[in-house]
Amino acid sequence: MKKFWFIGLLFVSLITNAQISVLDYETNTTINDSDIITVDQDHYTTHFIVTNNYSYDINLRIEVVNIVNTNGQEMTLCFGVLGHGSCHYPIAIGDQFDGGAPLPAGASTLQADIDVQHNENGNFSTYPKDYELRISALNTSDNSVLSSVTFTYRYDPNGQVINTFDKNDVVIATGYHVLNVVSKFAAKVSFYNLTGQKVKEVHLKPEQNHVYTGNMASGIYIIHVLAGDKELFKKIIIK
Image 1: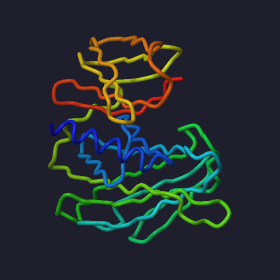
Image 2: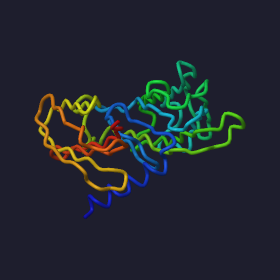
Image 3: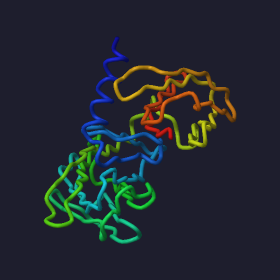
């Protein structure tokens, strides 16, 4: 029952923040409002991709909401759209940075990027160290806020990153009537529609997998990949 409750919250969050989506590139998972992304000295999550799901161009802004157990001199934050923008070091609570250019409607996920890197300097020995960030979609005419996603980048060298796949452990791509999945592990993959209903379930081998989707209705689905204690949620579009 706990698993279904969590999945239900995930769908609500995706629907609420459907106007822009933020992808954790290192783990290939969608970041939702209030998520905490934990990294340690062996697992760095440094790259996020923002997609514009509006039907018109938007501006993007990132804000430093809070910093805990450190100061901004241990963080480098780079933010830009279509190759514009810049890197910022140090950062401070209240800082706001724009993407340097409008993000076109339906833009490729490679067009808006956030890179964050904690640079441990030994001056602060209390952990975890949190950087709370808010990415906002703005109206291009008056810069009013249309929607936002707030998440926390947490650095804890004494912790262990668990329950997520490392980058490239599972690679997922959609094709014509097929979902191509390369998995390093034997795993189970479940497809859910946006109402939370499971519509398909298959089992993956630890190799190249081709999942037929030609008998599925066009639309947005959430796939849940489970292998042992590791799991991955990913939003896909079937046309």
